[in-house]
Image (cartoon, rainbow, N blue to C red):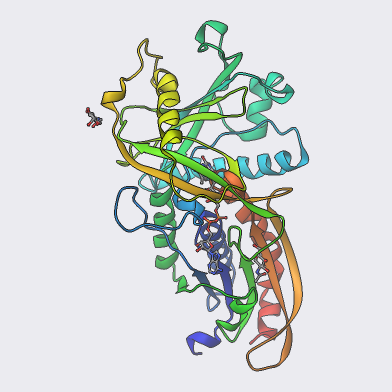
Length: 381
Ligand SMILES: Cc1cc2nc3c(=O)[nH]c(=O)nc-3n(C[C@H](O)[C@H](O)[C@H](O)COP(=O)(O)OP(=O)(O)OC[C@H]3O[C@@H](n4cnc5c(N)ncnc54)[C@H](O)[C@@H]3O)c2cc1C
Ligand SMILES: *[C@@H]1O[C@H](CO)[C@@H](O)[C@H](O)[C@H]1NC(C)=O
Ligand SMILES: *[C@@H]1O[C@H](CO)[C@@H](O)[C@H](O)[C@H]1NC(C)=O
């Protein structure tokens, strides 16, 4: 069989979602008899390998290179949040496994601290039992009023994970290649172009981020600052009354600390804004004392914090949340024969791609299961 005629599953997108799906598909194929000749082909315009401050860089559209990234559960008060909470729980379980089995992968177990100036009902009614049931994360504790910074009316802590996002994506890509994964670097111009990459395409996973013009998709601009702060060990998030956010995310493996961040829906600017940077750094220093084992009485002084790089990324946001569904459509293949092609859509993760990744990937692979039954595959040979 030539490479191009192997039955092939194509995954569009080498962000966290595409990489997680590609690895789950490989695992699914590995556990079945008679499917080892099926290829998994990853096709994407941009690939992992970003180091903030290094000259080679990525576009703001490749969200996975710009994420903080911490795992930060949100009380599941809407159907969308419930769906995401279930995915987060699976992802947290997978991170927990990975930090033990592959401690170099880029994920680190950390403490998480949350401060809210104006918590909604979901946050106010949260307790340890509910938090753990929803997220699978342990160690939830409400902070007493004396432990809260000025202006904050609710605070809590828990055990969570921080991800060195570019490093983690590289790790997943290396693993995919080692396990026989195929890759093509290509900007797909048309939504169905992927079906022409191989003669025998079983189905396509569309993990294109925001992809090709779904009218429900829009970018949410995120500006953050990578700093050389190196001794913090907890991720701290503060949500302010005016809707602004302040967070610190330690980036282990020599990544410094991410000081964030903005959430600006529909803002297309790719240049960092200097005033925003200064505001983020000043606000970040006010929560820095809480990022240590025991809170410190003095904040780090600004002279001791160097900016390594400004970051602007676009969160691939979608009205109503992520699109995760199978679409069957008629298509004309390059040999002009009319056939049908299946696409499993998995795009629009917004600001939560890492923390929901492995849950999303499991849900993508579930409908893929029947398509990979040996009987179905024989029909394709
Ligand atoms: C500042 C910031 C902070 C964030 N913090 C967090 C956090 O703390 N926790 C968290 O979980 N998430 C966080 N996120 C969100 C997270 O980054 C995204 O949800 C996630 O990266 C989305 O991954 P993705 O794989 O869907 O898309 P992307 O990472 O955007 O990847 C899309 C892939 O598809 C490819 N592609 C797109 N169009 C085409 C085409 N036409 N042809 C070929 N290839 C194409 C791209 O090249 C790329 O490989 C943050 C994001 C930002 C910007
Ligand atoms: C992939 O998703 C985009 C939306 O981001 C959609 O417009 C496009 O049709 C999808 N591509 C395929 C091959 O289904
Ligand atoms: C960060 O940079 C500042 C300013 O150059 C310096 O004073 C500080 O020691 C650095 N911190 C670390 C942890 O290297």
